[in-house]
Image (cartoon, rainbow, N blue to C red; front, side, top):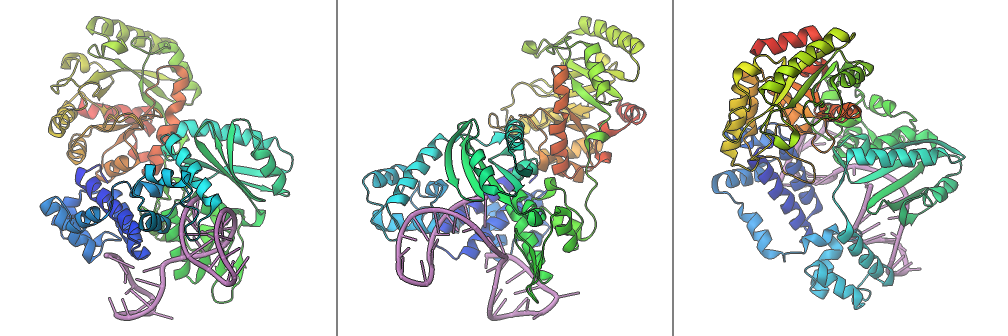
Length: 577
DNA sequence: GCCGTTTTCGGCCCGACTGTTTTCAGTCG
C-alpha cells in the first residue's frame, strides 16, 4: 500500500467480502483466501492500477484467477458485482456483531436464523429478555457474557499510541519485577513489533510457581476488571479500556512461545507453513519432527528461526510482508539502530514556539551523542506557533553563529520549518531560504484540499531548490486526523528526481511517514530523515519512536540523511542549494 | 479461493479455553 486510494479501496472491499462470507457460513478457507488477498494488496508497495496494466495481478501472493478478475472488474466499473450481491443478502449491522468478544460467525449466523437478530441493539434486547439461553449450545453464562461484552465493546476506545502503551508496559514490568519468584518478564505482541498503535498488551513471564504470579498480577493497581484467571494465564482490563494478558510459561519453551506471542498472526501462519514444508510442526511449545514425533525445545527465539533455516527476523519486520522470503535468501536488511543516528534536523527553540534555548538544545543533543542539530523554527504564517519573520531571522542567524563559537562537540545548523501555503508557495522568499543550512517545508493549513491541489503544493515545494526535507508529509495525526488526500506516488517520484528527503516525523502521535509509506519511499530511492520535531530538550528522546517506524519500513542507515556524518550531510544539503 | 521440489486435486497453522455437553463445537490468540 503506498496509500494509493485504489489499493486501499480494493483491500477494503476484499476484507468486507471476507467478513460477509463468514456470516454466510461459507467455506472458511475461502474466507481466509479473501483476507489474505486483502492484506497483500494493503501492503503492496506499488499502485495496483499499474500492476493490473502490466498483467501482474496474479503475481501478488494470494491473488489467483478469481480475485484478479474481481480487481479488474473494480478498476473497470468501480464495483464488484459479487460484493454487491453479498451486501444485498446481509442485513446491515450483522457484521458488527462479530466485534463482540465471544461471538463468532457460527453464533451470529444462528442468532440471525433463530431469533432474527440483525444488529447490536436487538442482540442486547434478546439477551435481556433471556431468549438467548434457550438456543442450542447457549446458556445462562453465555447470555450474561454477551451482555458484558456488549458493554465493553461500547466503552472501548481506539487502539492506544505506542508511547502510551510503553508507559503502561513499564509500569507492569516494574510491578511484576517486585514479585518474588518471577524469573523473567517481557512484553510481546504488537508492542514488541513496535507498531504505531497497540490494541492490547501481552506480557510473557517465566516463574517456578505461576499461580503466585497470576494472583499478584490480577491485584495490580489500576486493574478494573478480571476477564479470566487460570493457573498460567490471566486477562485484565486496566486504565479503563486496555486489555492486558499475562501468560506464564516453562523456561524450556521460552523461545518458541516468545516467537509465537510476538506475532503477527500472519507471520506465524507463514512460519508454520514453512515448518510443515520442512517436515516439522511448529507450536508455541516446541518444534516437532513429523517423521518421529521428536520435540525440539528452544529457550531462545533466535534458535527457532535458525532451526528453520532462516536469518533471525527482528520483531519489527514480522508482518508477512516478504520478511520470511528475504530471511530464507539471507537478504534481510540491516535495520537502522539508535546508535546510527547522528543528529536531529527538525527542532523548535524559543525563537518560535519551543521552550528551550539554542544552547540548551545543543547540549542535550550532544549528550545524546549527536554531531549536529538543526533549529528549524516556524515561519510567520503559522501564527499560533510564533513563526518568525525576516528581521528576527537575521537575529537568529547571529545567535546560531554565536552558539557555534561557544560550543564544542556539536554543530548547530541554521534551519527553518517553512510553511507550504495554500497556494503552494513558500512562506519565506528564496533569498532568505538560501541562507539556511537546512530547510524543512511542511503543510500546516488547508490540509483538506482536493487530492490534485495538495499533491501540487507538495510537488512545488519539493521542486524548490532550497527545500531539503518535506516535514510530516501526509499530515495525519493518529486517531485524530486522516492523511491528506494525495497522489503519494507522484510525490515520491518528485522527491526521487530532485533529491529531496521526506521526513519521518517521530512525534508519537504523528509518525508520518508511516511504516508502509516509508518503505515505498525506500523502494523508489527516496532518502528520509527521522526528526523529533521537539519543542523542548526532553522531546529529543522522541527520536526512538521514529526509529521504530524506520525499522518497520525496512530502512537501513544508508536510507537516512540524519545517519550521515556532518560532512556527508552538508554535501547532501548542498547538492540542491 | 489459492496453490504445487512428493500434489492441478486435496489440502489449507496450532493449541487452549469456555461453556456446553456427556464428547465437543466455537472462539480466541
